[in-house]
Length: 347
Image 1: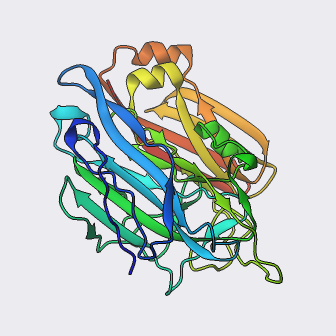
Image 2 (image 1 turned 45 degrees about the vertical axis):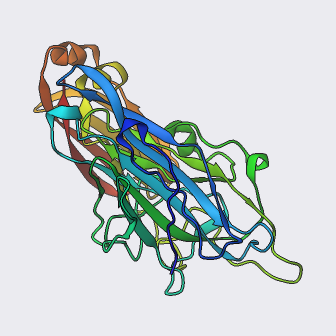
């Protein structure tokens, strides 16, 4: 049984313990990246305030952990306040994806399950009974849901959540020499060379619904002489080490957005394209009115990020709106299908 042993780390003035977990084997140690935080808009006070926090890392014993050995990574995250600040008592929520380096994959089996813990304030850490046994398809890689039903992680103010997941690498990992860690969603979507463990976290905060990209550069020795390392070729498996399934067409976008951000920056839309050469047509509509329209031809298979900018007429139309219910529609040529999502925009 793995254990989570908290150390002191204050989540601003709310005294949430962001713990660095320790293994039962004292020789192992956690290597954690920097802590990232988000902000959200508080409509009661008309200010921006601290929203959520996230960190990722991995555990290894540099003397004995090599390519082909199973080791654990983890993600820690939590929220400082409710959705939209003090005007609401609705908890923030998060979706947790995994984007490992090339050659590193999940190694989930009966001997190496996923472990989940939570800690409220300065209270004791507890095992989460809704820890998943497998992953589902996420936006930027396998998603670690809250329970096998694929749910998001509820984040009551003051709670810290930790998810530990088993990994295996089929090669040596070189840390900074393997390439810099992506700094934004654009770089992450391009799949630039890197030896970074990244746990993209999509925070539903009722404000900007940001993505946080906590990461840690990974260093791992190659397999000992005379051995052949196991492990995937990258991207992470969706279960207990079996072959990955073929990509399914998906459409991902924030379900709640701020009108100010929508008018200024538009929307980031993430498509998963099953077949190369496809054409994708994406429209943002309010009723029968088209607010934005993009067509992309000759797409490569895989994940594609599109920025959808509002037309001048659409920006004039929404400039003084208090809220708007919008519909995002994607038409894909191969396979021929239509996907759609509902988006709520608020002032």
